[in-house]
Amino acid sequence: MKKIWKAVCAVAMMGMVMLPVHAEEKTITMGTLTWEDLTPITGITKKVLEDSGYSVKVIEFSEWGIAYAALTKGDIQVLASQTDYAANDYWNKNKNRLEKLSPVSYGLYQAIAVPKYVDIDSIEQLNDNAEKFGNKIIGIEPGSGLMNDASKAVKDYGIKLQLLEGSTAAMTAALKSAVDRKEWVAVTVWEPSWMAQKFDLKFLKDPKGVFPPPQGYYWIGHKDFSTENPRAREVMASVYVPISDITAINGEVKDGKTMEQAIQGWTDGHADLLKRWENIKK
Image 1 (cartoon, rainbow, N blue to C red):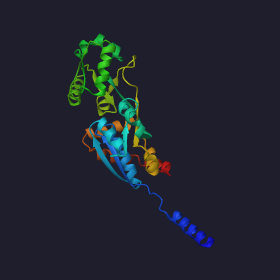
Image 2: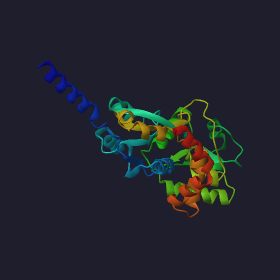
Image 3: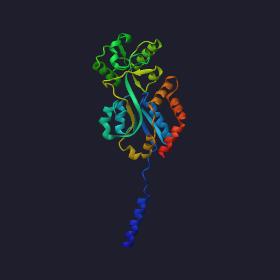
Image 4: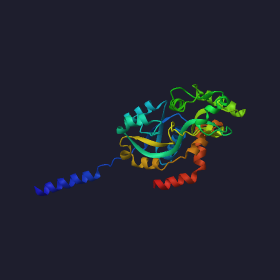
C-alpha cells in the first residue's frame, strides 16, 4: 500500500511540474487622446513594443474621463497621462484600480505667452501695456484646463485685458497674423506645441504661481498590469521622449507629414538611442 501511495504522489508531483506556466500576452491595448503631446508618445512606444514582438492596438479617446473609465474597466491596458495636474482628478478618483508604470516624458507647461520680440517678461506687466495688446488676451476653447487657469490668472493678477474665448484654430490664426506684422499679441498656449517653435514664443513669468509648474507624463496601467505583463512593462519603461522632440515631431506634422511619417523619421534618426533602450530592456 505504501508503495502504491508513493507512486501516486510521484505522478502527482510530476503533473505539477509539467503544468504550463502562464505565458505573458503578446497583444497590448493602448489608449490615447488625439492631442499633439500624447500622440507622439503613444506612437513611439507602440513602435518599440512592436519591435520587441508585441502586437499593439491603439484606441483613441476624446477626453480624459472616457479614457480613464476605459482603463479602469480594463477595456484598455495602458494610457499615457499627466497625473500631477492635467488629469489629477481622474487619477485620484481611479488610482486604487490603476498603477503607475514608468515616466515617459516631462515638461508640459501651459500659460500666457507672447512673441519674443515683445519686450515684457511677466504677467504683471500686461496691464501697463494693455493698449499695445489691443486690450485682449486671445484664448482657446472655453472649459479647457488652460482657459480655467487663465481665467484665474486674470482674477488673481487683476488683469484689465479681456480674455477672449474661442478655438485653438482661431487663436492660431490671430497669432500668425500678429507675428507676420510684428504686432504685440498675448495668447494662451502650451508646450509642447508646434506654435511655440514656429512663432518663437516665450511664456510670461507667473510670480504668483497661478499656472501649474511643468508636468511629467507617465504610462498608467490597469491594476496588476506589471505583474501580468512584466516584459511589456520593462519595454515601456525603457522609453523616454524629451519634450523638445515631441514639439519637433508636431512641427513636421504641421509642415505636411503624417504623424506616422514623423514618428518613423524620429525612430530612424534615433537608431542609436533605440539600441540603447534595447540594452536597457535586456
